[in-house]
Every structure is written in structure tokens, then in C-alpha cells.
Image (cartoon, helix red, strand yellow):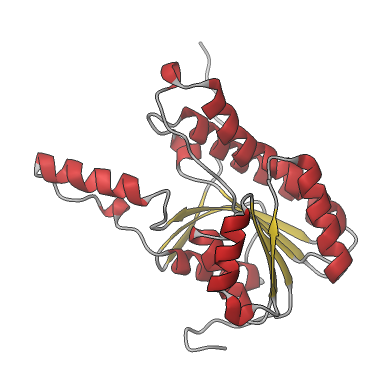
Length: 268
């Protein structure tokens, strides 16, 4: 147990984090590395890989940074094959890679729709299917966590593509959790609130809008750090009480779970 009270259940796990070179993915990589796990991070650009390797040089013996475009099915299958050949297993997958390309739907280009859905939805199949096939062979518990967003639950003006993609993550999580629980694979999703390259512009716009209107800054925009999100995700993985098939919200020190929508009957 460390000073924060976290119990380290198992070190030396093999962890794959897509989009692990910045933001929450990078914070996750650093946190897993710091407790002795071996971590594979991916990015679609060599420049991002080189930057992350330099920033994590103290963990060079535990880190494997690989260029991989999660939109490319062959790329992903080769990546998983390489990881299994090198380490014999994959214990944890974090589907973290994601982008947004905002704009009102009636003006949205097909390129922006495809770019977001290919990255945020199709990558779930491209990466997770070969990982699941490997995890099914392993005797120890395995874990799959995917990043979603409140945009996928409630929708956000100007983010039809992003909202659709994050709603897909939730449905994917519920379905896959039911399918693979008999193989001792836990599948969950996380809706994180953290200051990242993706969220900082939105926070700034909200601050400016509140200042213009003379309104107080909403509490829901007072969000924590990527490091806090990373710590809480690892705590969820480490805890034997964490259920499967759950969508968790994380903001700073707070962790909660979202309930599935209830079915209701109505007649016209």
C-alpha cells in the first residue's frame, strides 16, 4: 500500500494503451509504469512516439512505444501479434485513442464524420477483437476499459459525430461485457473529466461566455487532472469489487457509475 492508500494488487502486467502519447493516455502510461507494469503505447505518428519515449526515458526498460493507426485493421492486428510474440500475453487494454472534429451537422463534411467515427468507433473493433481472442486463452483475469463521454449519453450541440461515436462506446461496453465475462474478462467504460488538449479550448470558451454574461463558472467545468483520472482507473482495475459492464464517471477524486436507462412502457 502506498501513501494514497492504494493497494497494488499486481505489478508486471502487460498493458496496451491506444493514443498513449498525450493527455489521459500518457498519464495512464506513466502511472502504470511507475508501479512496475510493462506498457505498450501507440500513436499514428512517429513524432508523437519519439516525444513520449523521451518524456518517459526513465521507464525505457518497461516501455514499448509503437506507431499504429487504430483506423487501420491490418496495422492493429500486426500490433497485437507483435505484443503477444514479445510478452506472451495482454492483461489490460485501454481504448483511449479518440478525436473530435466539431461542427453543426447540416454543415459537417463527410470527411469529418468519417474521421471521427473511424477513429472512435471502428478502432474498437480493430484493436479489441484480436486482444479479446488473446485474453480468452489466458488463465488470469483481464481488463478492457474504453473512453466514452457524457456527449454519448446526452448529446452535445455541434458534436453529432463525436456524440454518436461515444454513444457507440457505451453500447459496445455493455454488449462485450456480457459476451466475455465467462472468460474472466472485465469490460468497462470511463467518462473522464480532465484538462487535456481536447477539453481546454472548451473550458476557455465556457469561462469567456460566463464572464461576458456575468454568470458564475459552472461547477461541472471545474475538472481535475489527467493524472487523477489515471489513478482512479487503475484503482478500479485493482479493486476486486469493481463490476463489469459499467460506465464510470471520474472527475478529480470523485468516481461514480451511471445507471443504464430503464425500460418504460407507454401506449399511444
